[in-house]
Every structure is written in C-alpha cells, then in structure tokens.
Length: 450
Image (cartoon, rainbow, N blue to C red; front, side):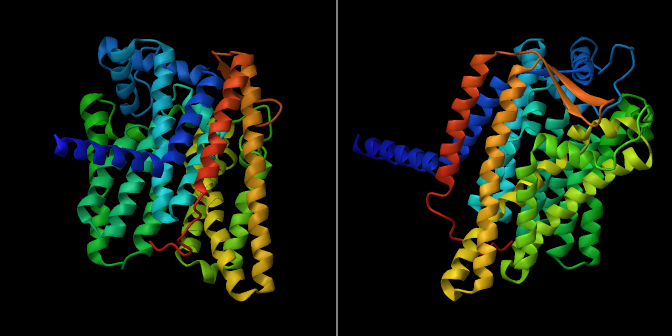
C-alpha cells in the first residue's frame, strides 16, 4: 500500500513538474484557441471548393469539384478532412475545426524548432508571436489545406534538423518521407527545403555520401507523386506541375512592386516588421559575438527572401493574378521563420546584457538599447494584432487589399459581436501571462550551439 502511495506521489510530482515546465506553452495554446474561435469562421470561393472536394471523397472516393473534375491540388489534405468529417459530421464548421487543430499543432512545432535552434525562451516567444498573428488565425479558421501543409512542412523540417544535429541518416530519410506527405498535401511544402538544405550543407562536410543521402531524401516524394497522379487518378505524372493559378493573368491594374510588403504590413503591422529589421540589424552589428545564432538568422532571412521572391516573380515576372492577390497563401510558409527571426531578440538581449556587465563598453550599451527598443516594438505589435483581430471579429467580410481594384477576401460566418470582443481580450490576458512566464527565470544560454 505504501509503495502505491509513493508511486502515486511520484506520478503527481512528475505531472506538476511537466505542467510547470510547459506553462507558457499551454497558456499560448489556450489563448490561441480562445482568440481564434472568438474571431470567427471564414469562408470564400477557395474554401468552398476544397470543402466540396472533401465531401466528394466521402461519396465517391475521389476529390471531385462542382465541375465534375478532380480538384487541381494534391489530395492528402482532402482525405484527412474526409476522415475527420466522417467521424464528426459533414459540416463546414467541423471542417474548419480540423484546420484549427492543425493550426494549434503548428504553434507547438514552431516552439520545438525555435527551442532546438535558439533555446527555450526564444522558441516560446516565436510560438507566441506566430499564434497571435491575424495571418495564422484567419487561415486556421478557414477550410484551406495551407495549414495542414505548413504542419507537415514544419514537421519534416524539425525531423531534418534533429537528423543533422544527431548525424542520423535514418532520421533524415524519415524527414524525406514526411516531406513526401507534405508535398502530397500542397506543393508549397517545397519552401521548407530551403532552410533544411542550408542547414544540411552548412553543418556538415560536403562529400559524396552526404550528397547521395540528400538525393535519397527525394525518393519518397517521387513515389508518392507517381502513385497518385499516374496510378490512382490517371492524370499523368507531370500533372503535378499544372495548376489553375498559372492560367489567369493580371488585368485592369498595373501590379505594385510592393504588394508583398503591403500585405505583410496589413496583417502583421509595421511594429512587427520593424522589430524584424531591428533583430537583423543587431545580428549584423554583433555577428562575431552571436556564434551560430547569426547563422540561424541568415538562414531564416534567406528563406523569407526566397519565398517572397518566388511570389513576386510569379506576379510581376509572369503577370499571374493568383500569386498577386494571394500572398496570404503564397508567403505563409515564411511566417514561422519571420517569427523566429523577431524572437531571436531574446538571445541578443541576454547576450548583450552579459557583455555590458562584463565590459561596460559604450558600443555594447548602444546595441543593448537597440535590442530593448526591439522588445518595445514587439509589445506594440502584439497590442496592434489583437486590435486587428477585434476588427475582424466584427466584420462580415475581411479584405486583404493589394490595391483598390482587386483583392482577396473572406466572409466571416460566425460574427458574434460583443461576445467575440470579450473572449478575445480574455484570451489576450492569458496570452500575456504566458509571455511573462517565459521571462520569469531568464535564459541561461547566451550563445546557442547547434
């Protein structure tokens, strides 16, 4: 009997310790669910098309759309949705709830990647920034496959980073399998190959064996593409490269060269964007003192620039209207890396606080002031984002303006008025408590090594 009492006591202590260690993350996840559900439930032509394809699987086994043709997208997200709807009922509300669950798990993966690269405090702050962005919340309350794709993309990136750190070929090949799954959800999964490739070849010798392993990484995705496009759907292997987004060109307007920046400013806000610039500025000013953190920042920056560059090339170079009106989807895979870049101010703050204490250098004092200014911008951006979400919850239609003529929009199917407003602020209070808990004990690691 005594042994059972001791065992129960140890289990209780373990659970308490686990909850205490993850209190910030639990607060962030709880606030995300409250705020996202309170903000609304969003729909447009794209979401209804994907919902039709999903319900078609339940009836016929294949993702047909209203025209009677297979939807021109990879199928896995629709099959996952069909399984969920089969269990919980064929309603758009249930479908949107599935995406919200994927959105919640994406936050956990952002934390895990941030913790692996920068440390626990930075990982938590990155997850918090990601969770509160109107960008992520709107997509997480819409039935679009983009959030599912981001989940699998972050998962294969995390598995690949762990494989590189542990020098495990088996784990790296598992990352390749997850990449195949991500690609079979949506082709945008290729964007996370940029940071993975940069990490793979920077933190390891370039030799024939490692190049061969990198080639083997792509075998699962080729097999998956062949099975779906060639065998199951009979569309032909190269149908993977065709999409309706490439069939429509921009008309009536002269596209703006700054459409991506305008979109980011509209959804994340100027404070958030400037905080990222400040983080980069500090990285370059003190690159010799930051060790691998500077490398991580550069890899995040390179990925963000690449994703935005592809979007701009498709819109401005090829004059395609869908990439021009849809940065919300085309640049979505860069959002976690933007949050990691901003959150890395945590490492810089503790690093330079230690440097000032040790040397008292005027230059270090100046950089510390810049870092603190960056934190002020983060606080202001969080307040701005909850205010944006307040506005979203009260509107029947949300517009993501590219210019005055064409834009991308969502209908809000669950406008709850004053109740939404109250719930959002309750969620924001929980969110703030989670943020404060992050910095309760500070960060012990000044120079994070990968």
